[in-house]
Length: 257
Image (cartoon, rainbow, N blue to C red; front, side, top):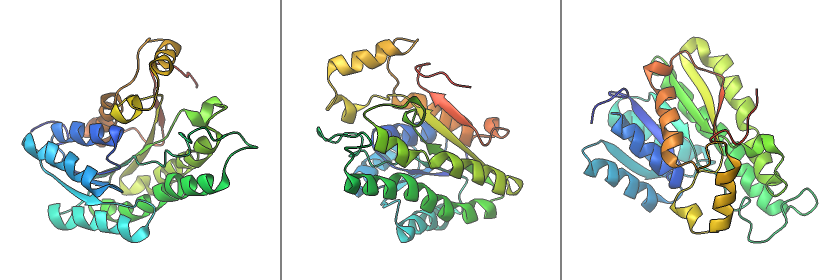
């Protein structure tokens, strides 16, 4: 496999529906992939998909909110492949976004669910960032990409807790871009709309999916490859003058300055 990411070692943290698409896309662009997920078997399946097509990938179990686990995946990338050029932090606690009928407004939000989501979606992104920066600096710089969500902006009545748990990603991203830019580190966030993959299709009705599609000017749903394509740009030398930005990938469903 050869492409614009040839020679780059990239961690993909979170190997679910979107993460799998990101890992495979970046590998097709020539990157060496280290993929981690709380579901270690799922991460291994993604790595094997890449290897079966001639790419280079290894997998490991990752609890992104645990400092030791985050340090281990960075150490794996460095020891196995000699360094780290980028990390896409993509995992999320989704139980708070799909709470099986529990209320998710400010009065009804279950606080145990909220605390669990904050641990993963807020603390986890900080923990993985802290683990990755020293390795990126030793490499002469690199790219950190964060998966945020348009729910931060759109005031969704049924996703208050989820939006709050993901909102801290944006000040973290901007801090990293400012504080470590002189060291060659770029940081950006991708803000998806509804991105459809097998896990979501199993729990969302056709009516729900059609409604989301009709709400977007492009009148169709996003797929993991749409997120992956932007990640590839931000990881590549073509994107080396982009930092501190939030890039919406939502078919125009939510337009903002």
